[in-house]
Image (cartoon, rainbow, N blue to C red; front, side, top):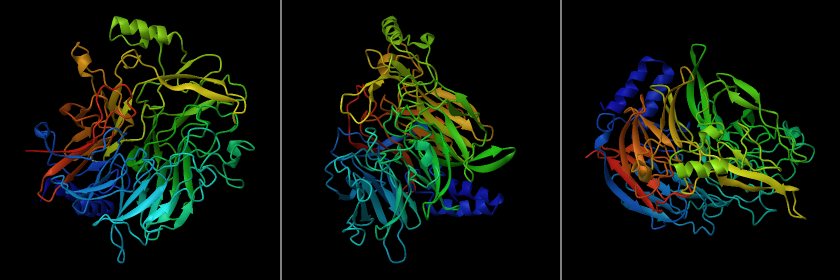
Length: 618
């Protein structure tokens, strides 16, 4: 019996549910069939051929180039049925032999406006329908035959559904795209769009479900409650009308046993001014649990009230277990841009270790009504810095310190949830990139550890009067300007990137380490600076955490119990994605990451690339 099956067999001693878990594990231990590997998005693999003792021996075994370098690439492949599937920078779908990287087929949707795209989904089919690969991109939902790559002609209009219909008809030129792989629940494809950050009026961000066989719309959930629906009053008298956001653009997760879909909801728009939407603005910035079959609301938890910070929920809510009063309870973990990790009861949506509404800075913008408090979890503690003082200005060199000190004295940070001002430039810390962003956490059910990566980076901006004739009286100016030195390094002291492990038995942080480095700084003796990062981690039964993500273009493996770095390699470019692991038909375990370039990690000197790379033991 393989080690992976041995781990599964031990679960037989626990309960009937553990037996069910064993059967699932035995069925697909070798695969990575979904974005987060399992429907719950744990990003955990029971494979352990690669482990803490031998991971240092990993070597590159194959690479595949898409021929499309230059565009942001955040894709996570899937491996199912002995085939690897992913989408390229231009949204082409590619099928490879996972042991060799040999191309099996490609499908070109001929995208006119390719969008950032994080992967495809797999629907297993039924007794009458062959398995399908689901591609959601631009404003199109496309179903392909998994074996041939040809459109499933009985789906929609010759294999395609126009996603703008019914939600963006009045805004034909507005951005509307799908950036995350859809969730699959039985015979449903569940997805949400990416919509504009401004102006306040625009395409609807409502999540929807479509029949996986026919492409017909099955349900739609109003992200902004309409008149007569609970929560409509949280938008003021008129704020709900034609509101363009929030949108459910992040990856969703599924609890198949309970029939629930968990979705991270984006921020309301305009992102930094809310004078026309006075109230808490439900269901923006919330983790929302819906009945997956009907789209009916089960519960919600709002992490930011009346968002003025672009702190949308972007990460998939990972299904975990947590200890509360001595017993393990089903929960979801949502890591936020604000640097706070919310662990919620999966049944009720209540924070398992409690939450406290704390006073936060007010707004000085005329007509604005910033919410006076925001929810802070009692456990775990923040996993990023929640502000910046003058004593924390970067000191990596005398010149940098002097420059950043001068810049710091031109702005003001009032602590967590600092609002932008009409009277002065302010420093938002962490930035809208986080904290955490769209990757989410990984969960190891053996140790009970959650693994979360984050950045420590600020940004500056202010509110100014809008031009005459504008739909809103005020607008953001420079709100996405990163607070960095002349060389592009953050103006705050390191670490600039971190990786943490949280024990779900206690809610405490068990280790927290710098993540990433910069070769040019290490050459000057500056080690353990950490690096800005965008991408996610995975955990394995081999006692490992794999992660790329960092602006230094490196791929690393850590010992999951201690955070000790065990292996590092240089990629062709920055891996702004989440890796995967699987076992090939030859019995070998592989680890794969895409490397497309710095993308949103602006300022990195590393050029873009277009490569999928696989590693294995010799």
